[in-house]
Image (cartoon, rainbow, N blue to C red):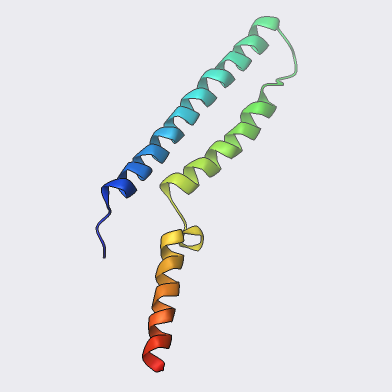
Length: 92
């Protein structure tokens, strides 16, 4: 297996920091929405909708940054194509 280059490691680090920023923003904004709901004394918990919707997006962000699927991995696709080309080259 190849070792990761500094640029690849920097890209992974950037994506993980971006996720953390997204998480902090989510917590602050949704905390404010829930505080507004509480202070106004509204009966219906309307902040539930933005919290849930944004939360789904946050879950997908986490999945793609921390648990990349082989199905969606450019590196895995590159390896498959390279292997197939080498096999075809060896056959001819």
